[in-house]
Length: 337
Image 1 (cartoon, rainbow, N blue to C red):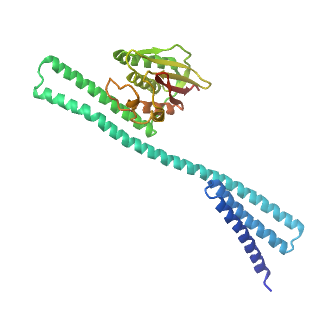
Image 2: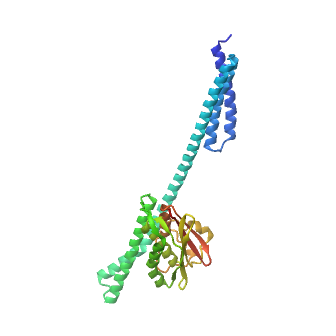
Image 3: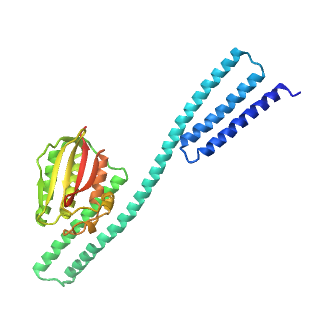
């Protein structure tokens, strides 16, 4: 006859194998489900194996009813705690797994954006640099001598230099945003003052192109923002709107108060953006010239809207674009508190 300890071991082994077989079937059925479901199933199988082995062994050993109840209570509490811990750990692992996947996807998008920026900037710098070199060589070699032409060359050199300096500034700002190095000093800012300053800055560009710049009266609240960065957002939107609006048409600025934010909308007369391009409008270097009126003030770096989105998101706000009659509308929402 086998010793009691061997009998107990065989009973525990048999019960554990039976429960493990059921668990294997469950895990196979759960293939493709969440991490939480798999971890919970494993813990339930492990706890079930222990409980089954202990209960059957206790019955075989003829433990009295009171001791058996105590044993079952201990097993129930331990099993509940183990299952609860498994659910929590599964939830944590699932969330971290999703976060890691999102981080990898974001890194891939940033890397693609960086490569695209390098390509676009190389393209945008090549032409003005070639022009600057040609004009500098002409001045240096004395090919251009009459005062009027020399003055025109000087003016064009200054214009191209300013444009390239602006492109470098945009690149620096975008790199700060993407690197998470942007630090905002948030305070109560009058949205009306920010809109007024941005409209005043963009007005000369609009006049030079023959575009009417209209700021509609409205209820412009105070928002929680950094005034320089928020002003840059609106200036970028206004300059972009003016650039893509034909002469004799209008760019309209409106604002108001939402449930927990203040909003500003810039509506242009660009003719609309194809629906398939709306999701790409704020991507780095996206210009969509095929969908819009070609720019007459020289090509930009395609960074203005990407910078605007980055600055708005740094304020915990939202920026969106949608098509309206004969144009599109960019709406910025900034929290008021």
